[in-house]
Amino acid sequence: MQKNITIAVDAMGGDNSPKKVLEGINYNFDNNNNVFYKIFGNKEIIKKNIPKSIPSNSYEIIHTDDEVKGTDSALSAAKRGKNTSMWLAIESVKNKQSDIVISAGNTGALFIIAKLNLKMIENIDKPALSGLWPNKIGTNIVLDLGANVECNEKNLIDFSLMGSSLFKALFPEESPKVALLNIGIEEIKGNEVVKNTYKKLSSQKNKMFEFKGYIEGNRMMDGDVNVIVTDGFTGNVALKTAEGTANLITTELKKAMTNNIVGKFSSLLNIKNINNFKKRLDPRRYNGAILLGLDHAVVKSHGSTDHIGFANSLNLCEKIVKGNLIDKIKQSID
Image (cartoon, rainbow, N blue to C red; front, side):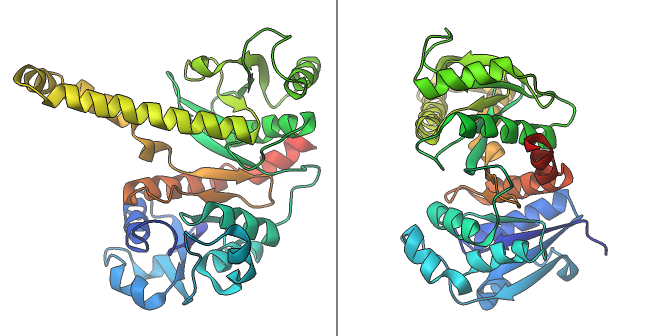
């Protein structure tokens, strides 16, 4: 059976691995059978846990006893990492044996090992961590989410180009609309880096995206823009705030719908709307952060997600490869 896309999977990273990783592969394969999985990790454990419903010609297990622990520092993981499942998975992409790599393991280690093995795209100075967020009418790309605490104007412009390329790869029928995250929408607001980036993006015509100026944090979900650019410090704070708010809303809604007879009766009457609401805010739907700027895409699945979330990250990998993300970034930078 001919496969179109090969995904290198670090099976040993994240909570409840490799079980959740292998169940995620099974779920992904059920919905899409044009992917070949190169699975890196302890062969004996993987063979015990891999679902029998996955055809044996759809995967290959590459054995290693070593793995990056969640408690490892990024530096120590990189120093001893050449025989870990994470290192070997990334090396598979480097050697062109796989198209893309995914791991739910140690985030810092993944970034360090990826940068040690993969080259930066020419003319890009810093990689950026991007994520998918829901908005009122679709999906946002937000970057940087923590790879770079400090950024200059060129970095933010590069992030605009890379984020727009990712958006086009994932949503080819839509047009990227870029905004800079800021403390106000007036031109005089913000620090010097943000203001200088605004001036440059406003003065340059770019075929890759439409520049929409500034956006404030409370308008990020409105859907007026779909690529939101910021430095890694601000982006990470915004991400954690959004995750906490979503968890609060869903928890309080569940409590209100189950703590008395009226609530339970109301929830039964509105079960369809409630389920749609929960599905819309389900973080598993948006699982998968993408490290942009390297000559191959690296996808980081949330370590605590379940097999559904991991399967969604595998689906993201497929879309990235099919959408020719790296080529789009190179063309936009040129």
